[in-house]
Length: 106
Ligand SMILES: [Zn+2]
Image 1 (cartoon, protein in one colour):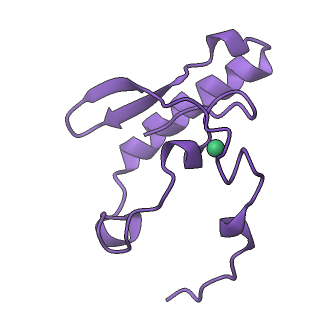
Image 2: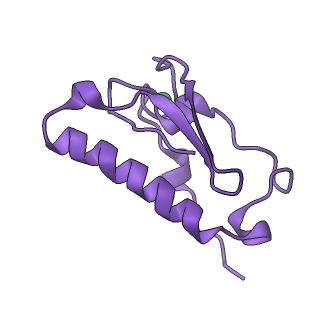
């Protein structure tokens, strides 16, 4: 999944996913790995959106959530919720995840 975030204009990641899923409930890259081609496809979509911004064509930036499944060879886009003015991150500028102490890896 990928979507472009235009600060102050479009929802941020936390507007779309206010709370992280409970630990252990959702498979992660650590538990199931990453399919290499999925990384390449998502990176290509993200770079295309960045090029639109750099070219001054913010009007062309995709404002939907792109969901890619390289295993099923499918791509769909879903409508994003509106930006939440009370969002702790983009609305209230609280970045508790960035300010959290680092966890030991291993
Ligand atoms: Zn937000």
